[in-house]
Image 1 (cartoon, one colour):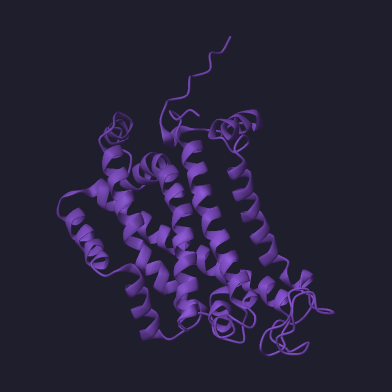
Image 2 (cartoon, helix red, strand yellow; image 1 turned 90 degrees about the vertical axis):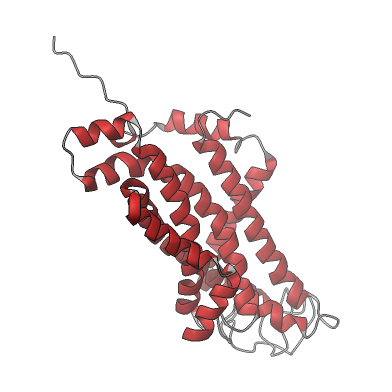
Length: 300
């Protein structure tokens, strides 16, 4: 009989992930299948993503072209949510407005995670002067209020989605850099990392195979929460005219346009404002759920 070696414990040596039963148990432990607020939050996230992805299919009109009389009321013929001041269908603009906000939030957070994760991982493992220099650079960025830093970047580069993603991403890099650095420094002193180093593994393998998998969970939780922050920044910058430019439908700019008619047609500002709030809150609650799922010692 051939004896199979037992797997060595450590984040970098996990061969396969949990099966379906284990994944289901994780969801139950995290409370996602037991808390109504979790079900609603994840349902809203799925709904908003589906709305953004299926906008060309479900939108009844072109959101940039007038399709009715200006400021038509709710449930007008052919316009469930009425029209805006230019006669554009409000339902179509609400549907198409989901994509810029969601795309900007995800892309900016993804770029911040990549750069912040790499910076923090290397700084936490290397330590010494290298760590000090990188962390002081992160502190220099944090000296500016993050929204002010984003405004400065967009004002310097010009409005538009690409510059908006860059501005928000730069403002959030220190958040992930400092978190990844603290986690990596903690893991670097553990036995499995010391064993890998004494075994002669290269630095890149130690970083990517040993330390990185063990700190992905907290980074993912933080990323989910920062998506909500990024969505707020994107909406605020679009409201100020520094983000997505008209006639492209965008919830942030739609709030600004609707503000001019807050007494005649309050729905023009209230509907996109409520949707922004719902997306931000759903991302925050989803971050709480991920924290519960990835914390093996938390019980509900």
